[in-house]
Length: 602
Image 1 (tube, rainbow, N blue to C red):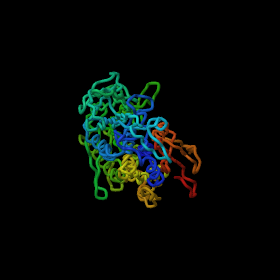
Image 2: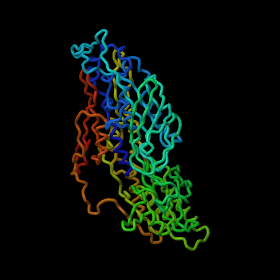
Image 3: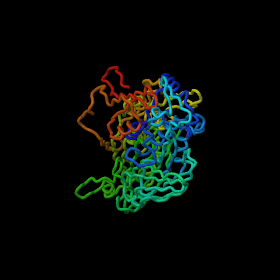
Image 4: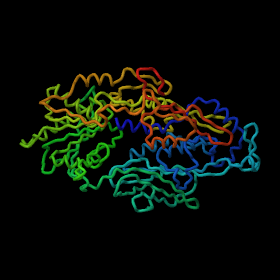
């Protein structure tokens, strides 16, 4: 469930606003209904739109408060889309179309990372527009003065990688011309990027892959420079995280992947469908066939980011390249090899599928391992050890016990449960309510006097990853693990009292633990064996925010790790006053579950 929690923290960044705000509509019509649209030569007026972040900060000059990631990039584009005035900018591509394009191009790309850019000019009222006589204001209505220009022209510039985390040491980056969005007629004469690999700024060509090698991991700051012919030089910066894996054959691990073999194994059908796993085998030194198998079953991995290389080369969650003896600096990777184990790693092709379906696949892997290790009558073969990580422990236990029930020999001496939610998992109901509610919300923008012509936007048009969050909560594996669940979206969210968890939990409990030939069952858990509480009382407030904010504010809260469980009371209204920005009023209230009582948690 670690991955599910990570996704939940990420998705809170996409809260927006409630659609029903006639007061906002009336005020916008009242204020801007008489302006001369032809003076807004760019087609974008900042005060007319909704700022989903601090658009002023992204002006083409690098500063501490204008880092651009994919989320910020989308917020900038969405803000621009709401600023459209008159007809000049009405052909701007809708946010959902652009964001789908980003996702599709990255998914279909042979390069590791695609980069997207946007460069737009927009206008805003001069700070002294009224006192300088550029406009008059009467009864909170703005009127242009003939022959006067009340606007300053400003720039939005942002460049972002479409992936934020990479594993390995050498990666290919590409900036496709199809991912450059702009209302400028200027021609790009040069693009340079400092990839933070010690090489400084490098000139790159559009639509051409650039190979970049890192010699260390951690956070990397990418700085991008666009030079326009006869125009400005603009800068943007972003950050990525590199999980460094040394080149194949390196000395960072005994099991280094140099002798691995991989294949896809498909299980028997469960309820009419089958699923597959990518099985990687790396033999211990001196072994010419599987002899002493350690079968490792991965956990819940919806974005398929965990693989064999990450298992053997990293020291973070799930990695075995971790020091276990400070005196000798012996790693777990080395210790496994020293004991002569052959690694067999099972990587789910779809970890969100039904646990039973993936368990049937694991059964096929175990049967294949047993055939391989016995095919040459090797007298040194040993029984298997099966280790399941997190959800993988559920899958592995189910597979071993199901083989026993069906009179199949799994030839396993030890089952290791590594931080496995045998009795179910929890994601706070308040968080689940937030995701489900926002997926069903919309932003309605006023259409009046031809100033603004935009269809109603779903929140997911501006925050498409919310749909991924909902899909994750509704995936079979998540539903089978989650003890408490909700159903519905928008204003129709309610408790789900007939969940997949109930039926799976009953079946799983009735099966019991593996027992064939005296198999040992042991468990390792990350947590306190003493029942240490989490630090907040029943129905306690986990987070409470009630102020005018921009999206990066909440993102920064998440970055500081101050949220342990998530819920959002969606933004109730948009605030606007004459000649100021339209910001977002946010009200968030996160509460833990009460103890056997009915109380508000969302």
